[in-house]
Amino acid sequence: MYVIIFVLLSEKHKLDYEMKSRLCYMLLFTAALLICPGIFRNEEARAYTVKNNKVTIYEGETFPMDSIVSDADFLKLRLISSDRSVSTPTKDGALLGLGIGECVVTVSDRKGTRDEIEVKVVSKSDIHMVALTLDDGPGSHAMELMDYFDSRNVKVTFFMIGADIGNYPKSAQRMVDEGHEIGSHTMNHKQLTAIKKDRALREIEEGAKVIEEVAGVPPTVWRPPYGDSTEEQRIAAGMPTVLWNIDTLDWKYKDADRVAREIINGASDGNIILVHEIYKTTVEGIKKALDQLCAKGIRFVTSTTLLTRDGTPVEDLIGQRLFSKKVKKK
Image 1 (cartoon, rainbow, N blue to C red):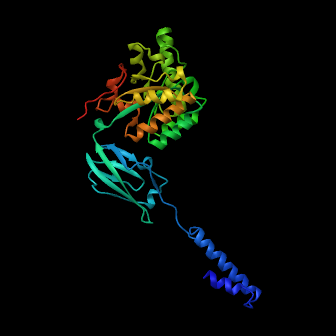
Image 2 (image 1 turned 90 degrees about the vertical axis):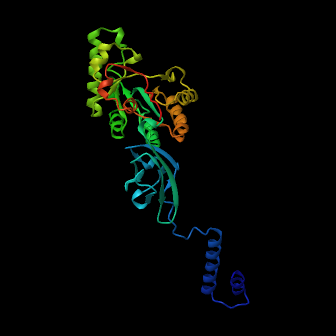
Image 3 (image 1 turned 135 degrees about the vertical axis):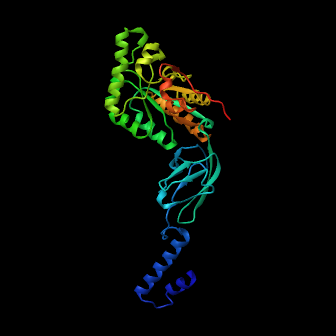
C-alpha cells in the first residue's frame, strides 16, 4: 500500500494538489494505526481491579468487597457464587457469610474480563483478630489514617481526649460514619489514681459527655490515662475498661520502622495493640505493618468486637481490666 501511494505521489503522475493531499493524509493515518493501534479505538478501561483473590470472612458477616476489588462499579459487574449456602455477593458489592465452608465468587465485566475470588467462611472465633487502639486524639493525622483504614477494611478504636475533640469535629464524626469505635480517654488525660476521688470521677463523666456532644454518639469503651484506675472508677464509667497487652512505645522512640516492627510482632490473635495517633511516625509505621498483616488475612477490629467474639455480653465486661481476648481455636 505504501509503495502504491509513493508512486502516485511521484512527479511521473500528474495528480492535482487536492488528490496528493488526500494521499498524504492516508499515508499518515495508516502509519499512525500501525505505530499506535489503540489511539483510534474506543476501548473501555478494565472495569475493576482485583487486589486480593483470597478472603476469609466469618459467619454472619457482611464483608465489603471494595477492600478486595477496587475501581469497581458493582452494579455493572456480574458476581456469581459457586455455593450460595456458604457466601453470596450482593448487588452493592458485599459478601455475605452465610455458612461455614469454602466457595469461589466469579467477577466479570461486560468486556469478558473474568476473575475468581476464593472465599472461606469460618466461625467468628476462628478469625485471626487483633484490636488496634489509638490514643490521645483526635489529631491532625486522623483523616489520613481513616483514608488508609478504609482502603484496607480495617476498623479500630479511637480513645479520644474530651478537651481536644472539639478541635477536630469532622474527624470524630467520620470515625462514627465509617464504623470505627469511639472510646473515651477522659477529659484532660489526668492520672486518675493521683488526683482526688471526686475530680477523677468528673474527668470520666465530663470526657464522655463532651465526646458524645461532638461525635454524635456516646463512647462505648474507655481507657484511663496511663492505664491506672480503681475498681470504683471502672464501675462508675459504665462501659468496658480497655487496656492493652502490646505497647509499641511509639511516643518514646518516634521511629516508623520500630512502630511497624512492634505491631507486626505483636499481632497475635486476640491481642490489643496500643499506639498514639498524634505522631506522623506512628501513622507511617501503621501503614507499613498493616500492609503486610492484612495481606496475610489478619483482621483488625474494634476492641468491643474482639472482646465479645465469644459471645460475652458487653455488660459483663464492665468493671474489669481488659488486656486481650484469646479464644480456643476449633
